Length: 286
Length: 286
Figure 1 (cartoon, rainbow over the protein chains, first blue to last red):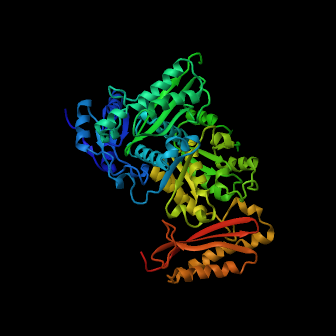
Figure 2: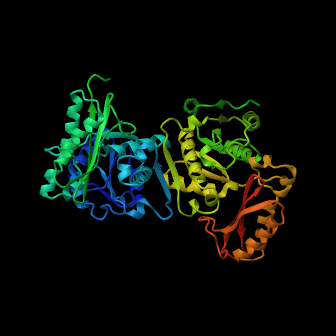
Figure 3: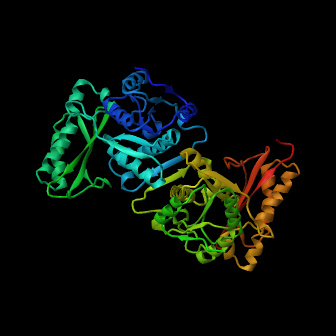
């Protein structure tokens, strides 16, 4: 179980990658790796000759009042977690490596994806995300890149960007990995104390309540939302930013569900912000 | 002298390009081709196995009060002009081909390049330019792309974008081609009546006056600007938007010229807006 080589500079990364051969699978992360990340790495490992995992807490995707400073960081632990998964390269650049002197380009995805849900609650967030992903793609030049669907809107934004700019990367969406009680894995979970850690399961229970109702044939988005909101309201101290039933492509709110829809929610527990989502399917629709 | 194949859809372009082999040289234009464009095509012809010339009047780079509707268009003439230059592909897509349904990405170059001179006078212009160039690069996938230096700031913006996003295109800057009286070639020149066509030479004469003074050792930017402004003010009806002596990389205004600098100007004659620039060199500096 060798620790993966730790590369700090984009120059050294380029050198290392040029020295090897075969398709590169890329897992961009902000570190504080958990089982969700590791499932992405395993899949990248299966589907590619080489794997690059980046750990970069990107300042430009955090708002001024957000938790950039408090975002968990533990590079040594991340490196140990990668070791048993087979050979990979751990790319942990500094800010100046990702955004060298003179760097001045921003990529923005507009339309509904750039306006609703996460975009509405975190102004500038997806510009930061799209730009850093474009930048990391430029540095890593991967054949495939792996993203967890907990960040569903992020995946849609990145997919839109790659399509529009013709970036030659195959995006691989991967299912959300959950704790045994259903809570979606997130680096932010470790910032929850025991009581809040318990209350945090309200998100997945709310989504499941909504999905169960849809499974019984309910098509009214207000009623599907109400089912979720009842669960969330029962969690003391949990604040709901949104719980929405939305079109799976545009993320625009739906009045009625015809076939597939997404339920998505964002809540805060103290200073910790959590998001989750689930796919809804009303029977009788193709 | 065969007319170049005229391709209207990105799908057909892709098909045609995949059927061939060898490096692609790309000349993006807004049509109304003149000798400046043709010099780019000739150079692309010399340096690449294949040449693609695009003709696309990009609506997103024109401001609301600008001349999008009046921008000259003559695709049949453009096609005839390309024929004697050797084989090429003429790609003249409609707006829906360049920006298909769902397209929603914008590329913005910030910093001084996104703020001064053309960026200040044409808000949103370079976002339109950067985005359409990224988009055309995605459709054409060229090895090299050719740009005339009359649009000097545009070249810097595109270079910055390619560097920052790691777009795998070699940018080839090409010298401004001029009429016999020095006027920089521009599709907009054909919108000038005879009197204004004569007055338009004030731009290049102003730039040359400034360059001549620099050549005599003058390092004061205000004095170099004054020399140019005297020429521009002598042209009746010509309105100066800017005449600036600027750093060749950042385009920030200089107080003193140390080594190389650029003089850049934008003026209007009636409703026609003209730009030009020249490199300044003060002797005794490396």
